Length: 308
Image 1 (cartoon, rainbow, N blue to C red):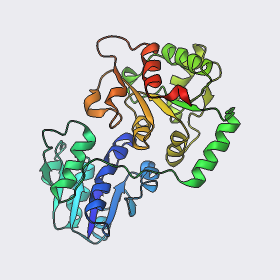
Image 2 (image 1 turned 90 degrees about the horizontal axis):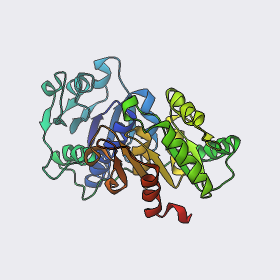
Image 3 (image 1 turned 120 degrees about the vertical axis):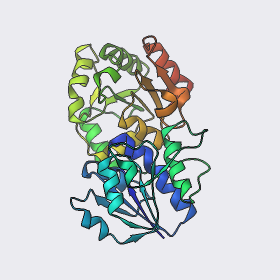
């Protein structure tokens, strides 16, 4: 059997959609899963054992038809750009995530989530269930590539890492309103270093201004890994850490997919829907009052991070 998935972007959303591929593989182990993605995020799929074939977003619809016939095609993004690719596919059945915009509902059958599916990951998996896939629990099948692990560890050493247990922080976010204040990250960094841990800040080059604000607040000793990894290497970097601290951003979801402790600080979005999967207990909401450093430290301590 063959299945086509259209989830083009963005980083965290692609990660959260991976359990769809795992659910299909669990039901049909010998099936082929072909995934269409924006080239910026193909590195995530290269780390997922449930995805067989990666197709960078086709520029012409005839390229989709040339992929062959599929038993089902799934629009997991619900936008025109993802839906029109499904429309062009030669598939016996076409289904899509229920939140369809920009006319995406014209191209696939909308799958509404089970009432018990609150988290976005579970709602995605419900689309796979609609075509007969089964999943008692969402699994991401995400594993870093060995060569990336070696490269990242060497780069950490160049940044000043001495091998101590590592906590990675992401001070950036797509929107400034989603960010925890730089002063708080700075204080957290100092406290973690005092506790004998190493702290590295991660993110894309666009997150550098947020990191520089943290440094300006006195976060001496923070390791600078901003913009120093590819997406695939980011998976390896997070895998080298014992915990991740960040907001509603892509690396938070990578940490959860890897089974790492992920403390999420949420300013706008609902943690119940978009928290690091399976770790709503590690989330703190800043919607009604500021999140304090002691609260973050408390979550890390409860997770046993300080015992490493």
